[in-house]
Image (cartoon, rainbow, N blue to C red):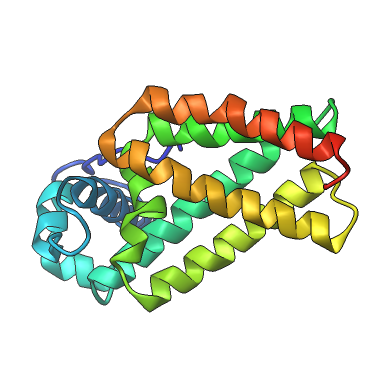
Length: 206
């Protein structure tokens, strides 16, 4: 997902503009949230854990976020926005609908493999964060379903509904391998999903 790593700013006096310092601190806190939460889970992750990982003071933390949930939501929204953009970019360009879907699915699965901490934040730990997080996850999943429908050129409402089902089923199927750290199982889902979509397309169900 190409999220920034936790990097400390230069010690002592420096010429960095205040807005750049603030942005760097905010990014470090969001990244630290994802990393600690992937190790301990959302419920057991504390603000203190995030501060220690990001190497940022409590005072600075509360200049950016009002609570643990606030930081989680910012990290979640940053990550899903990036993932959504990467999927759309992967599917753009030449090729038929199924070929473009194949590229989108491959991008999604490889992102989960390359950044498991952020992947867990988006796919599994969001359930522990409560109603606000779930509402944003549902909206994100709805957008992905719309993207898949556009990629597959679903021409009917029934076809678009099928695309939403595909996204929902994919989100469920990746959860187990993601929690187990089974990268091979994650990658193996791609060809099966593409084969199923190809059959649906051939049958006129998309």
